[in-house]
Image (cartoon, rainbow, N blue to C red; front, side, top):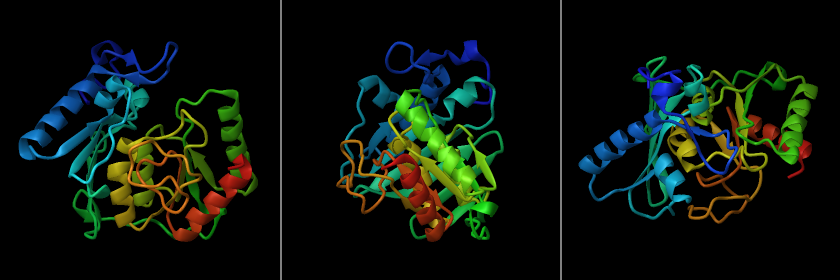
Length: 273
């Protein structure tokens, strides 16, 4: 990643999806995924693997089974990577019984390694980390949001409505960092107080964006919820509103149960879920 960072020709940029897509994939994404999956298969030959780039080529997200399954995003924040912006990372998560159990996220630019195992706490470079719950309300909170590649009139209207609602509630700061995984890490590490994603269609993160970060953030004390019942096929959940899972299409992440509930209520009122 560091060698090819911001070098568009060396990175070999292509585009996912239909003609006119603005969602990039690079040769570095593909090579990173090959390296990670090869190492996992060598160490755990009976385990299943789900990789972002392999899934993109096949046109579908493989269904999650009860078998041990590794879920990999070789570069989260590829658009940042292509443009020489340092907000990108590698994300490796593992599920057993359809439940995320292990999360590993590496930010090569800050040389930060985030790790968590369910029930064992969350760590950054070996030091315990926790969410920041000191913000009493929105006026002392930094909230992360993400438009992704959503450019439809309806999607734009929803995104603007959310921004308007946050500003009207006197939120201290709104930020977009261009990486769903790093957004989760920032909340988990106490650098932000909340994160909202999945308002429409092309702003919805996928299981490889959630899996590792979900474990790390939960172990750091964060709270997840979903905005509505939309889910990708093949996940562990029923598609109900009862509980967030990594196949959910929408997410509200808060540094506390109260912040999560407040952000969810504000978003639902602004966007109309």
